[in-house]
Amino acid sequence: IAEAEEILKNESIDVMLTDLRLGGENGMDLITRSLARPRPPICILMTAYGSVDVAVEAMKKGAYDYVSKPLHIDELEIVIKRAIRSRAAEVEVAALKSQVSDRYGLENIIGHSAVMKPVFETIRQVAPTRATVLIEGESGTGKELVGRAIHHLSGRPKAKLFTVHCADLSEQLLESELFGHERGAFTGAMERRVGRFEEADGGTLFLDEIGEIDLNTQVKLLRAIGERTIERLGSNKALKVDVRVVAATNRDLREMVRAGTFRDDLFFRLNVVSITMPPLRERKEDIVLLVDAFLREFAEENGKPPMDLTTEAMQWLLAYDWPGNVRELRTVIEHGVVMSNSSKIGLRHLPAFLRDDSLPVLRGGAGKEAAVAPSLIAAEPEDLNLAKMEQRLIRLALARTGEHRTEAAKLLGISRRTMQRKLKEMGMVEP
Image (cartoon, rainbow, N blue to C red):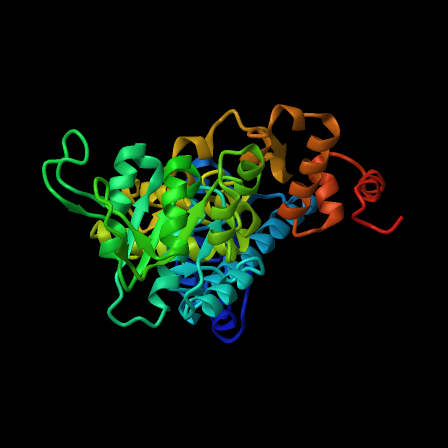
């Protein structure tokens, strides 16, 4: 053990293979001491005493896996390769986490993926101007965060930001919310009310889900943006306002214009500068950064120590397609923080839909199973054809094996030649 500890002290070791019996010493002790090092190796235990109790104790102490003697070289090779892939994944995750402090993001918008860079560049360019901005994207992608960032970088030191969620209000209530009303303007209007346009004078008004407003309100909004004047409901007096409008929608306004449900002149007024927020499935590189930020936020909020995800849990998060985008990821992490009683959040602590036993599986090495991305079972009916599902399985197998085609072929239970042919058919290799 002393010799092994000296090697670990002086060299960087990724995987350590140790026997249970080391002369008069115990391999379990070596595992315990090794895992206490600043950069612990992945530990694999060899034992001729291959009982369940030994395996459980080894795993409890932090061993990655164990193999029974007499050793079978093929089995040992599979276990070591799997351990090396696991170490590579840990290193990648650690590297991504270290980038959180490097200010990837803008005004609480976290990301370093290629698809987010144009978003940041446009925000910085448009923020100091007076231009109206239209933010498009699916629900949960962070459109309101973009609106806040534009306001905060606008350069108006005393400016205020007001938000109106257009989808939450009826036609009459929305008009009153935006433009205000005089006493007696409608049933229940017991006193004068100042609208958001007046309150936001000199600042920014963020209109969320702008595609939900009715045509009558669209006319009044067009005047407010174009002429910078409004009238309270029940009044004919025009009021001048200096308001910068930033709007957001998860609907296709161009299609709505063609359908006659959204005014083209209002669309052109709103769409002076457009920003499209990409869905989370197109920026999965950012998931590790987002997870780290949410972990810190919810651990602090719930009075818990710093927390982290297991490698398995992180792999499932990276495989999932996130139809609810960043908002859904945020909810999942909050659930994990609440449900875990330790500093580690495992798959069992995440919501049930992420660990559904009905998920299809790919059989991996040493008789273990690996879950297929949940997006496979969430596919639309028209996508459920054999060719498409086969392509998804191949891409998943490649991702799980680090693009190692031979290993991916083994995982899928096909020959390397068959894998090569299928990759050619998919256009992933030269014909």
